[in-house]
Image (tube, rainbow, N blue to C red):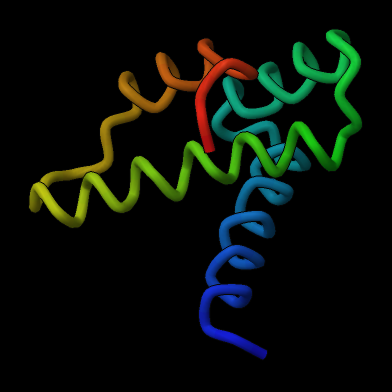
Length: 83
């Protein structure tokens, strides 16, 4: 198994846990919105995982804390964000 696939799977698992727990609520709300727009639950979770991965990369490169407000704002832009 490649490290890249392991990382992708880790972010997807995190998103699935967030959806199941409802914490943070914006993740489940985003999944529900995307599904109502015609995406499958899997596609919606993958898009959210991409946003999470990108935000984590920014956080690390900028040596800053996770920005919940920025994350929520990026989720609002789905499905139009590029992967």
